[in-house]
Image 1 (cartoon, rainbow, N blue to C red):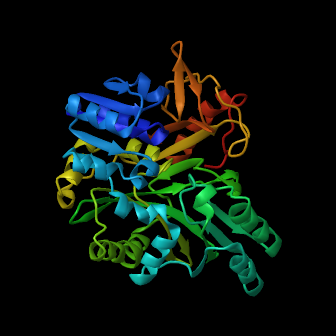
Image 2 (cartoon, rainbow, N blue to C red):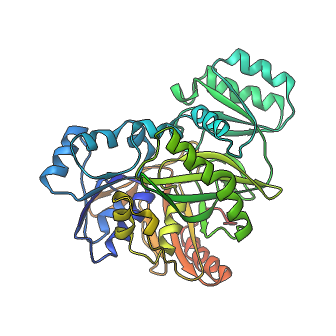
Length: 410
């Protein structure tokens, strides 16, 4: 088979790397790809020019299946355009992508279908949101309605901090139009988990669940990031909690998707927080997450080609999932200063062969790799013992102490 993957991040590199392992994969084109996909066998990076050029490329090169990585492509309707041209693609259409594209839509969807979630209020102007702060208890959570690259959620401990966040979002427009509307949500205390489900137009199957580390600092402190590391499977999830998630969140979600004609061929991510052993849904993503994908696919022992084919052919119910024994961990290395101001164009050297090196947005110049964004690498490995695994990855990470920042408590 020939595949096209849309995106330039570590998630897309992970997908490409896993597809390369399959004897059923002939070639993979990644648009635009990164330095990591440039190095992978069977892979070719291609430049993204415009949608029509991409569609013509797929037709001309007889691409069997296209996989969409980032939410931006999905929310802009790339799946709709492929389907109009009778081209095979995995991912939600523009209508279904609103599950991720609008926090207000998704929260109202949760409320309508009695999905366990935190109480909330929505606002479309600064004055109403500001006045609401005078009648509530802190801490609270403020979320921008639109896409914000994983950085649009703020935990506010007091009134002064909340006002500052509201001003930044709704007056100073730090998130542009994505912050025209917001949600103020009850703060939940507990631990978070990322659940991933395979969807076709009829059924679903639980894929796996991971622990994500969203904050820049140790002990989950500081600013939100796109993610600083992940562990699969989540060490705190037992069979009892899995059942609660299915009963209180996943099953009513599937019922709602069918009722609203929002079912699609692809991945559905559930961001969940457990408070007193009760799961509450924080958000949906309509694609694989990052950095969870790096540890998820590192642990996967099934053929990813078969999984994608089952999704496309509405055969998810019969998908065979096999996982390596033990646990997988991904450790993210970033430029110093991330997620605020940071240096780009840092040369990326591979200093070890004892783990997988998964690249974020990056470029090749004179056969050398250089960073393009704040997150640079994910170091990924799996092992039966978590302590052995952590020691191995951190011993490699220490080789990069002078070039990159990483959390010491993943």
